[in-house]
Length: 185
Image (cartoon, rainbow, N blue to C red):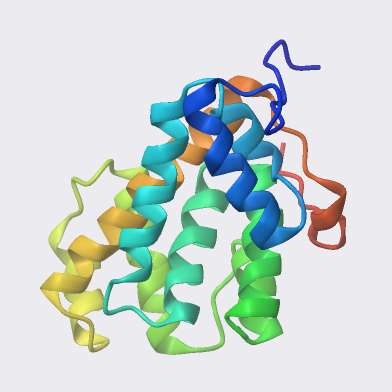
């Protein structure tokens, strides 16, 4: 059990309260990630800002979810894999075989999305020191140098949430139970 508080809009520091209230109004509940990040309002606000900026990239909604899921699986973040699996399927309308392959760390059935997932994993594993081959494969699949930096933005967003979840011991909300995931031991 985590020693970190799961804040509500009533218990959060003042600066985080409107952010949690907005999330609850939009989603109908406060995701546990947000409830933990509220302990440091600047961290919660940064996560929301990174998310908003990532949504403005040239990557499609499905491609953005591929980045977020590939990074979260690579980092072993059970909360984020469950949450983004649901978002990928229900909101981005990603094909089930793509989501299932990402969750399993298996090759994707779409070559272009596979290049994106592989490049994302390389960015995470190599902390940005991506060798020429993964970048060349990514570019050969039709992605651009701009999009390589957009992937880095998505990885930064997931690094913040994945590491915060690991530190705080974030449990998956019941709303994400249908997409529960456990990292391989």
